[in-house]
Length: 212
Image 1 (cartoon, rainbow, N blue to C red):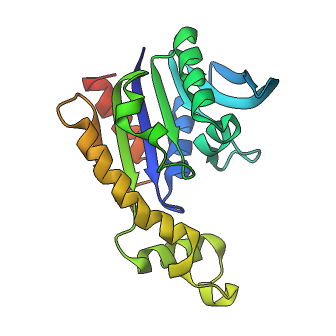
Image 2 (image 1 turned 45 degrees about the vertical axis):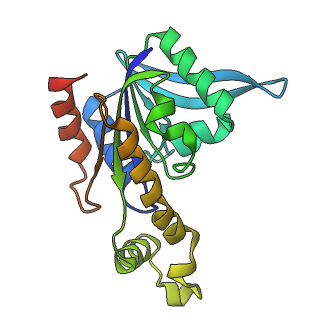
């Protein structure tokens, strides 16, 4: 069983990948870049850059070609596709000697695969950090800043967008997360969307003093 699962989950354009990028930069060059080969529907597939490894810690995913952004679970778990393939990935990483897995994603965050109860089958400790919008205007401001266009210019309604609807739905998952870590060593907490870019650097240092 892998010791630690550390995940940044939540809404679109909240800076999850930016914070993971800052963290990987603080670590320097990875000891190993993992290309992961697996079987799906009778075919062998390979995920290039499925994870970057420093010692016995893996950060799931890879940087973009320009190195400016990290593509984590949306890349690796997106290709794996099914819960069965994701679970086999965890098993294989355990056999590889990984002790801590760091993960960030937007797609699939409502899946039962990423709830503490199921993750505890593969990880001793689960630590979830959720990045969510409390108000629609926060979402509008962040997404417009990222795209360089207003929702009006795009001819779309922010409140009706998939990104905002996902944000609203994630509050249910957050509540379930809180329920499933009660009485365990695992944790769930919200992080402000305006937390510093290097927030994860400090958080990982704090975690290493306690549970890593």
